[in-house]
Length: 340
Image (cartoon, rainbow, N blue to C red):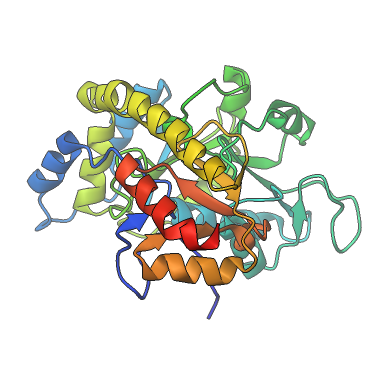
């Protein structure tokens, strides 16, 4: 059984102050909650998600043929890795960022594909170009802007499948992506709106294929999909995601408040003596500098506070904190005082 590290509820239940996930702390979005209440779970949804794919395609300005639905981002990560492994096994590695969501690597290893970390040589030797490459902007766990992403994309062979994980693009608090429209059109774009909507318990995602995606890869992705990737509630969430009122809620009510909360939270961390890394999203990484971080995290968890240990991201000694309201920030500061 593989060991999976993730934020959110654990064996101790739901944390009172959960900094360990990157969900929008202003959520949930009431308009989407209403759509979920109206969803009909007594019937099968359309397995092809025909109407939903047309709606998402129109919203993104692409053809419906380029939209694929997925049970979750993690499900799509496993599926596209499997599709690449089936058709191109032995031709090259899967390229992952140095610090990134662990499922990219786990999926590659599960299918026997070598893993190459960006900027490092292939562990097993050789100079084979990647058959699959992963990027996330804003990145996770750091939440930074990945300034070298355009150059990295341009350096990849045209037949490398590059997946751009857009999980945190809707929660970007400053700046804009450095990718041009043409560069984005070359990527597989993976969207998971549940984080931006504050509804991470509703699983559902979608991917937009590159404008010139290989037909064989698209066919394999459809063939490897479960019969019904989306349930009624996931379909309702993704349909509501495109509503103007929902987007207005995110842009005018949430993002300005998250910016204010983030600055306050960073100030709290710095006052506690933590080293804070810069970023552009609704989360950031910090180094607490505690003599025993494991002990400190256990003690915080006992007080109902959970942080995301970044060891599994390849960043030992660091934690990732989602931005939470002031009351949670103050609770963290009080609980940390014995370690200061």
